[in-house]
Length: 203
Image 1 (cartoon, helix red, strand yellow):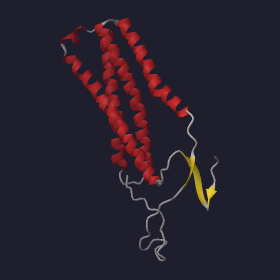
Image 2 (cartoon, rainbow, N blue to C red):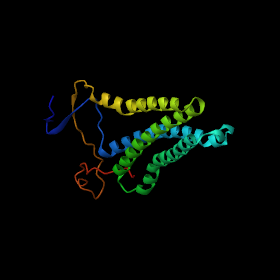
Image 3 (cartoon, helix red, strand yellow):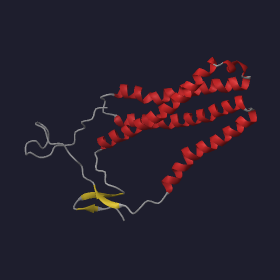
Image 4 (tube, helix red, strand yellow):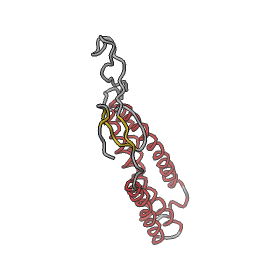
């Protein structure tokens, strides 16, 4: 069903109705990104905490050079991942009240993608380290390869398949732009009309 206009109002094809202004869309996107980062941060904290207590275990002293190197790489990766997830907080503080929430959303998307990739690396590396200590080197490589394939499938393959699935027949929705009542001194205030849209959200 092609898009068109009805009674002078633009139309677009949507699967469900969501009438919102650009500012409301940015607020919603930022809220969703924060939820993603909270979930990601919880997992990173669990893995990071596990890695931090390993040197204080008695068996840590018997690790060979390969296991020690892998451990140090994982510690650095965990620290970088946590810093990446915390980056949107610093960006938010810097851009607060500058009316550029679109930049904040962009930084949050970047942090979520990079943090997810580092989380996959930590999952694979930590399990490989555990299997190397408990069973042996080649077993740890097998587990690492299997988990790496699983991470790629779930993080990249599955979303790609879901995106390509055919959607149900869309329905037309007339775009409605909501405007705030005009205030004194603004255009439209003289005749009691509706003034221009005002961004009431401060980043």
